[in-house]
Image (cartoon, rainbow, N blue to C red; front, top):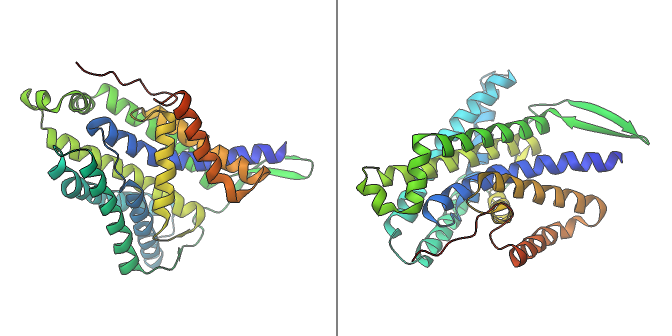
Length: 304
């Protein structure tokens, strides 16, 4: 029982990270109907930048965790938003009217470029940081097994819930959200109504990149090590989470992330960690076979 609860907490934490990355996928897909395959590498770039910022802050003697965390988040989100804008400007905007395969290949090329850029400039070695948030809540002990919730795990789960609420409000209740939904339905008509479509799409990419930045900072603090290759696998799993939950749905993205995270956690604990990815992708195949629109997605209606 104790191990089950512990794996549930671990799965919620891992799933929250996947959910944060998946939110960026689903926001971009919701507005231009295309998958940003460079999104996982934006998350990797954010993790690498966060290591640099945390190391610099430590060298400057800034040891207060809330201040260091706030500064790190702001700096990393600012840099990563620029990366998100650049990806949209270079890999997507020139190909907006091209066949769908063209921007897909362009995004994969951008992903490879980002990976190699970080490898060349930062090296291939893993980059460690000191534990910023040591400590945990010991929840209870059952049959000699103590169930705990670390401060970092609690922060990741709470941040994910708060961001989901904020972005749901942003999309459903604000003028910017209405512009996004209008672009999703008909970009030409939206432009005729006076909405700046280019700016709306660019801001969406920047917001998605900022979400990936938050996930990158959280993972850096949680695991304490990052490298240039973490973006591909995490991005693939977050994409799986977005599709599983129903791509285009913000709650669906987080729900899919939580399911994938808990499945991996329980599979690793009770079966084999080597095959946890197989379990996640097998679940995705089953969902697509019986519910192609995902758990919370809406069936696509063909326009006539």
